[in-house]
Image 1: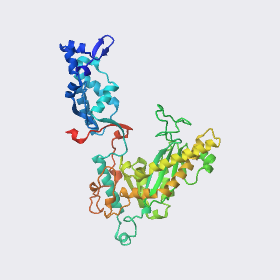
Image 2: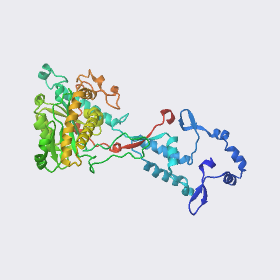
Image 3: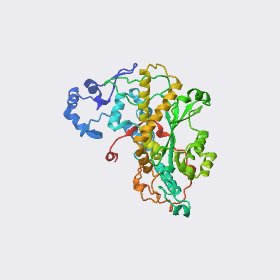
Image 4: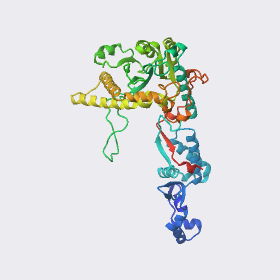
Length: 466
């Protein structure tokens, strides 16, 4: 192991080192170099072969641990941190490995280098791989599971008939609601150009680049709000919110060019807010024929959704605001789990096609106004196609998260929430359950640790953990 794991100082002042030769080993161990050479033959090296922490394809790995105690402690702390759901990057390994080396080998500090070779071998030995984080975990934390169960029970209680008269005349689909009275809305950012993600490229290309028409156009330039109903039918136009102080001047100039199948709003941040949300309730939602008797509105727990004015307006129109628990939208919000991704793929295709046709016709420069007009047209076309071809996805997504299942519990076998076994979702029939309060009153801030884009994950089989 000396020949593989040690370094000999060639020039101490310049910190130049080399691997030990047989002569160096002879001087160090006082053993003839011929004997050491014989020991280093494959038949003797095989005696050192062990299954160790890693084994690939049924073969065993030779243990070339330069600093075994450091690696063991580094690995142990890695397991503990990942067990807490913490994100780990290479910088964390570098900092901790340096700290551990100083503690364990204070007399040879000049030998430690956090080299790519050592780090990659360490990762292979312990089967650690780089992974991209996702919105969903294979097994969600217990606190998330409790929040989701509370949300399911809230929806069930509030879907039951409110009095004996309602119960006697019940002709609805889900308790006291028709499918057309169950809605989910969600805001999603959209750019003017879709440059991120994957592209086809020649094999072996070292750089995969994408031409940008204007700086920042591949970042969020507008907010798109989609509205879906449990029967899969579109009732409310998509809404686009663009940047502008008031939008009055822009409207006068561009409005005639906007696609009429979307509604357009403006504000300085291009985000939805209390004023826009309230206006949407009063001018669009309650104007729907089926919503004159109220409905169930599934929305995220944004602060402006929970203001007293908003909640009062909803109560006045018998609309139940079903606040999705913070951090759980990727698990139980229909738009997030089944709709946004395929819709955005369609939107990307329509944008690419639109730009290609315009440039083929001679268009060389694009203004912000041009992109706003294009966005209204492409969103309309993409949404029309999605609603024609994928309405079944909408229906299924509402059922998967329990929003459109019968409140007596007879259809709960259809529940399908990522990371939670159906057997663990004891929702009940809404009558024997204890009161748990409104979901927005139970909200509390959850950790944002999992919002990072990549994470180092441990890939060792369970049997190796003993």
